[in-house]
Structures are given as C-alpha cells and as structure tokens.
Image (cartoon, rainbow, N blue to C red; front, side):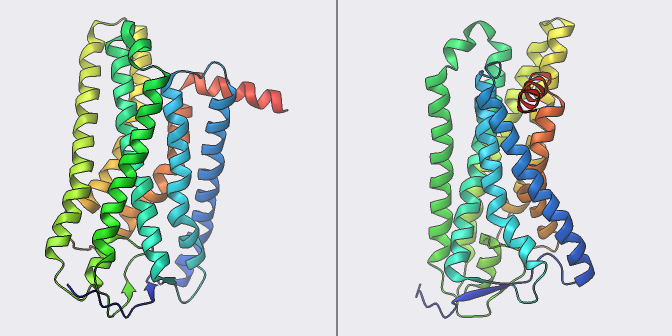
Length: 304
C-alpha cells in the first residue's frame, strides 16, 4: 500500500448545518460540558477528602470521573466551537491525535466499568473475602491495567488508520475524527483494515459487555439469600452501575461492532457516549447512593 497523503487538514461537517439549531446546540452542549467538568470534579474531591468513602468501589469511581472528564474533553470543546463557525477544519495531525485520545479514554472507561462490576460481584457474593481479594494493591493494578489496555487498543486503531493514503476528498461527515469516517476517505481498499478495526473494537466491547452481564447475573442470583434490607442496598448500587453500562455500551456496540460503514444516526449516537454519559455519571452515582450524598453534604457544609 503506497502511503501517499495529499491531505493536510480535514473539513468536518459538524453536528448540524442549520444555524438556528446550531445556536441552540451551542448553549445546550456548553451547559453539558460545564456539568461534566464540575460534576465529576466534585465527585473526585468528595472521594479524596472523605474518610468514609475509602472502599475500592469509590476508588474506582474517582478514576471513572477522571476518565469521563478526559474523554469528553477530547470532543466536546471542538464540537462547541464548531457550532458557531462556518468552516470547521482540523489538521491531519490534530485529527489523528483526536482519534488516538478518543479511543484511549473510551477503551479505558470500558475496562474500568468492567473492573467495577468485578468489584461489586466480589463485595456482594464473597463479602468475607472482599477485603483480602480486592485490597489496595489489587485496586492499583486493576486501574493500571485499564489504562494500559486502553493505550494498547488506541495504538492499534491509530496505526491501522495512519498508514492509509489520503488523496482527497477531505470532508468528514462527523463532528470529530473517528476510524470509520476516515476509512471512507482513504484512497485504497479498506476492507481488511475495516474488518481489523471492527474486530479490535468489537471484541473488546462485546467481551467486556458479556463479563458485565455475567457479573450482574451472578449478583442478582446471590441476592436471593440476603435480607430484604441488604438486597435493597445492593440493588440500588447495581442499578446505578447497570444504567451507566447500558448508556455507554449500547452506543459503542452500535458504532464499532460493524464493518466500516457510516449511518446518518452515527452523530447522535456518538453524542451519547462522548457527552451525555459523562454528564449523567455523576448524577447516577450520587442520586442513588446515600454515602456519596452524605459525604458531599459534609464537604459542602465544611466549605460554607
């Protein structure tokens, strides 16, 4: 494959071409992004400063908030800015960097959600062995493995894409740079690379999703022997996790577990896992968790 590249920048079509809708979206996504930053920062500060929130579940939750901030920052600021400008461009290097960062933080979040499901499974099904099984050392290794796994996945996706020749056109029918839209612009047959990309993303998404489903199925089965109070508390925690999993994995599986084709719905589906889910995560984990709400109240009262 000759790596002939005549493209130095890409033109993004953005989320919408309608100026009135673009102005509404600008205000909406600006509020969303502010909520993502403030909500997740508040969770991180609350967990780090509260002595009551020192269990592995909150350790993982704090890192999930870090990833949510990073993941949304890859696409949201550019999306918000482009809603107000006529010509939406991104350099070739910037496009590849955005692709790399998006897959890095996105895949890291997938692994973290899987780790959190494992943590809940051990805590509920094997409570007597929980502190010895999921100790600080193990938690550190699990988080590190999530970051490394996301990095390896992203490197593979980026290397598969960057070797392609781009000789024009250079218009991407999306609001950020991703693998599938770029494969559509390559001046060569991308079938093999498209299959490789789908296999890489699809295997990770599907395998982690299966692990999540099995973990929560085991949890639900084990709850039959618990008291009504213990069952209710465990269900509240698991419901929060399952809600986040569905909101994040559903769109990801729709986008990445298919050949290199693009659909008109891709933009709106992508908004879900790049903006909406990172914004909802703090609300989902706080509104259904009394320990986090109480810790936030104590932190707020101390600040006041």
